[in-house]
Amino acid sequence: MSWNLYRHYKGNHYLRLGVAAHSEDLSPQVVYRCLYDNPAARTWVRPQPMFEGVIEDGRTRFTPVGRLRLVQPEDMRTVLAFGYGEWKQDKTFDQYCAGKDTDRNHLRGTRYLLEDAAGQPVAALNVLRFRESLIGFASVATSPEYRGKGYGSLLLRAVMELHRFAQPDLRFVLFSEIKPAIYERLGFFVLPPEHQHFLPTPAMATGDTPLSATEGEFLKTYF
Ligand SMILES: CC(C)(COP(=O)(O)OP(=O)(O)OC[C@H]1O[C@@H](n2cnc3c(N)ncnc32)[C@H](O)[C@@H]1OP(=O)(O)O)[C@@H](O)C(=O)NCCC(=O)NCCS
Image (cartoon, rainbow, N blue to C red; front, side):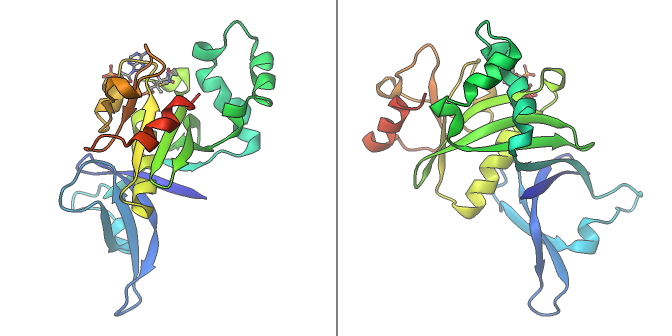
């Protein structure tokens, strides 16, 4: 499974979900999801030739910026290399990778990989489903040479919107090992003290209501 990501000529980013047939004339319509907060709508359709075409000045309307896909077993060393510098704990890279084979936290979840427009793997994260409507993000990491270019944020946003498309009431939680600003820009807030079990690494969540006690229970066993 994979989903292409685009930058509209006006600057915003979008995730292409697929192509649908128009019910009246069967014309192909691209279904896509915006990766920014648009109060008008999050999911849009546009005739495929228009989506893939150019605007009056000759520029493409949507320029590919990357591709989101599921991590395959053969990607694992590449993905582990993204966060190795921060998480190695004195291990060589081979030791670090070998240790993951028996690491319960590593083995669970569904990993997503972001490739840039040239097909280069640049960032990855792990999605953990705690409850029907509560998803955790773990192991968010960008390849060191690609950091600071927006790939980490793009990956997080794309995975969030992909899941929200299927399930609008979802909320997301994570623990921020870095200053929370990057996550706050994506709608996460630092949870109140009763949900903090691993300080100084704060638990954060999206949504505008407090987490329930049951939802909070999952944060205790996050790591
Ligand atoms: C955190 C990380 C995934 C961000 O990826 P990225 O592709 O560089 O992210 P973006 O380019 O979208 O955003 C950059 C923002 O990340 C934040 N950031 C990145 N590294 C940071 C750090 N060490 N401390 C604090 N903030 C950091 C900053 O807010 C930065 O914004 P700025 O450029 O305005 O200062 C990447 O730095 C990384 O892989 N770090 C090592 C692993 C890690 O710590 N993961 C986070 C676990 S919670």
